[in-house]
Length: 102
Image (tube, rainbow, N blue to C red; front, side, top):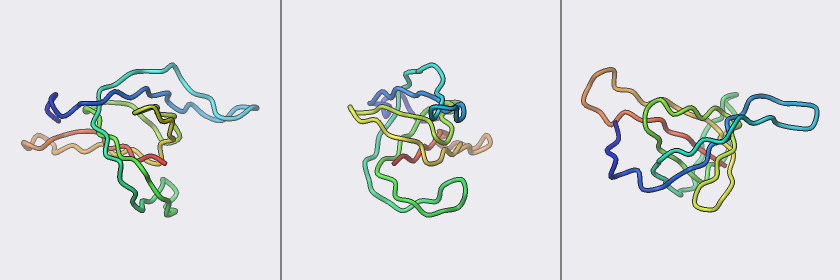
């Protein structure tokens, strides 16, 4: 698990629930501690298409942040491209959830 001293930021997560008649539908907002890395890089979305990510956010294990969710961090509102659970399966690794955003 990521050490608490690394989780220096807070993010407001509005989980994507689906599309409605008037656009995307989001669930209730949840605040979570995190570590933010602002770096532009090329990533693949859930459909396999290449896209540019401007921000990567690292959350504690178990944080729910599905693709399409709206995340507000450091005063910016961004959209989740993909979310990955990084779990060492019991090995002494820094388990976490990695979220790449637009």
